[in-house]
Image (cartoon, rainbow, N blue to C red):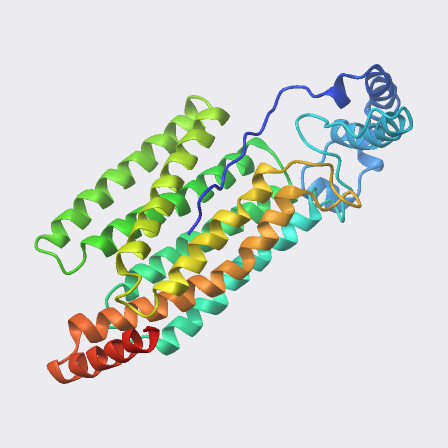
Amino acid sequence: MVVFLFVLKSVLASTGDRSQMFYSCLQDCLAQNCSGSSQDSQSFHILRALHWTCSDECKYFCMWPTVNWFVEAEIGVQQFYGKWPFIRFWGIQEPAATLFSILNLVGHVVMIRRFRKEVRPSAPFYVMTHYFCVICCHAWLWSTIFHIRDVRFTEIMDYLGAFSMVLFSVYHFLVRMLAFQPRSSQYSLFFGMAIGFYFVYHSYTTFFVKMDYGYNMLINIAFGAVNILGWSIWCLKFYKRRPYVKQCAAFVALVAFTTLFEVLDFPPLFWVLDAHALWHLSTAPLAILWYNLMCLLVNWSLFWHGGSGFTREIFNKLNEYFLASRC
């Protein structure tokens, strides 16, 4: 479902925080407000709850006069500590991306309930679809937390949550392609263990060895490309045989299109809406399309492979009617 969920995030200094104006303002603020007990009296409870320190507050308030100076000097808006300047709302670091992450989370919760109403529990891939929903909800939960407050732990959990969606999407594709084939269960177990062990290893190295932003982006793109290429080939192969392939092809095309927002990079509109937030907004409707597609795929598999000869004959007649109507 997800093609490119990672972008290269730099933790190195940026033009904004390297500027002399920002440095001078920061040093003055730290000296005046972050010494002794004054820092506690000037902090709101919600900011303390989100672990905004006095130093963080100084960086935030010194950022805006520096931004104004860059704009007035016609240099343009610059990044600070690898991020664009955002207006905080109740301590939330990136309000728009937070809201759109919640929309994605809610979309999966709502659509899995619809999926349960339209698909029998005995249908093929019924349980796997629920596994995928849990993984996606977990990923979007950490995306929400990360955009509320960007620290090392929430950043890593956001990366790993997104990567888990990509990996499980690949596993789901492989299992579906091998389903109803000889020894399909053995292949499913093999691919599941291989992908699972790799995710555990990658999580361990990310937490305890090194957070390699370039490598994270590379493997995400690689697995995402495998997923999107695999579904594209599948759509071409079955385009004239199964009536729901058009929905699958449309979904794959939309997923590829939404990744353009991750390629784009521009200062946030109204200081809240950047390309990354727009990407989260564009992925929210994809959950609806995905579960609708899953309902079609699972029910087709149930009738074709799990139904009686009579139901398969009826489904075959409907499929023949669909093909004839295309001529």
